Amino acid sequence: MNDNLIRIGDLALDPMLLLLIVAGLSAILLLTLLMVVIVGVTRRGTEAAEKAAHASHLESELAELKGRLQTVAEISVSRQSELTRSINQRLDSVTHKLGQNLNESSRKTTESLSKLNERLAVIDTAQKNITELSSNVVGLQEILANKQQRGAFGQGRMEAIIEDSLPKAAYTFQATLSNNMRPDCLIHLPNAPDLVIDAKFPLEAFEALREARSEQAKKQTRTRVRQDVGTHITAIAERYLIAGETQDTALMFVPSEAIYADLHENFPAVLQQAARARVVIVSPNMLMLAVQTMQAIMKDVKMREQAGLIQKEVAYLMDDVHRLRERVLKLQQHFGQAGKDIDLVLTSSEKITSRGRRIETLDFDDETKAAPSRTRKKSGVAAKRNGNGKQPDLLAGEQG
Image (tube, rainbow, N blue to C red; front, side, top):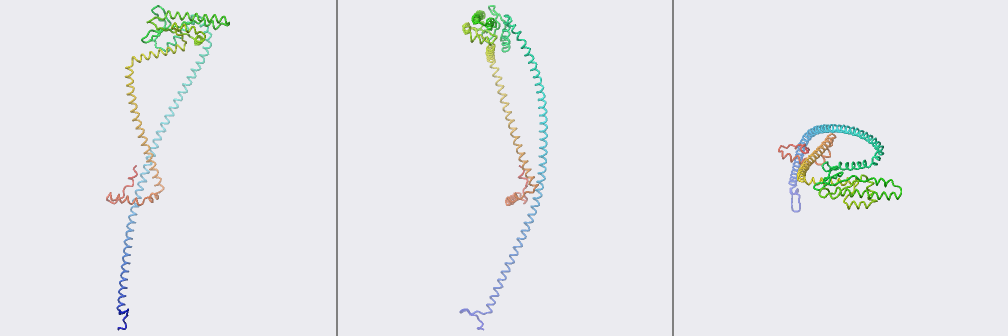
């Protein structure tokens, strides 16, 4: 039996014992492999069950998402119909107002054309009057040939200028002075003596100067002009310049701009004599300017007298302006708020239209791929906050 022993160096092993040891080791190894296989199968079954549960959960979520998307689509369609109805109503209102404005413009245009026709008729009448006036020029020349009629013509021009520029209480025609002289016009200046205006300018010498042909005749008529005008200047100074009653300066009215220019150009000695006598020679334009100056003086004096009332009215006016400014600012705020509301409505309309287009084309791939993890995180957080594991309302972020 010792011969069957297996010797390894000094160690002697029994073959049967060695075989038993090997068989035991093989059994342990098989048992270990079997346990590993059993554990793997168990894990795979658990994973399959988890995947099945997850798939079922995903299917329920997809069903719920589909229902919410359908609800969103219905709400979008209803909102779009309401927006379309509102836009149609506003378009109808604008169309109505536009029609009214067009009718009003047509009416005003018709009235303007009728007024234009009336004015054209007036122009035709004025043209006829001008034709008649040109035919009456000869008669006017005959009137000016008579001395008395010529004086009346100068008086009429002077009175027309005065009446057109001054109030009736500011002047008097043919008034009698304290020396029984009657000037053609007295201008009543405020807080000052009256101003005398004389309209009896001697025109016979100028008419003779215009008709003179020879140099000798012209020289004689120039001398006559200087004598006649000088005599009239002296008469005005002696008759109408009364200390304390009238101004120390009087006006001598020349009814012709041409004669006035001729005096300034060819008779400087006459102008010097008038200046020394404190008589101012005026033409129709110069008299109009002087009268307007006196009118401004009268207005200034009247305004000074009414200064307190004017200041009170100005204070009322400033209050009205301030009140008007406040109301305009309020109106501006209303318009600004209305503009902002319209911008918000347009923004909401664009969002609704965009979402409706995406729902119509079922274009959700980009948005789903863009943030899948974010969706899961938000749903988990919402489930924790709600405490019941439900998903948050998908419309909560679309109310803006």
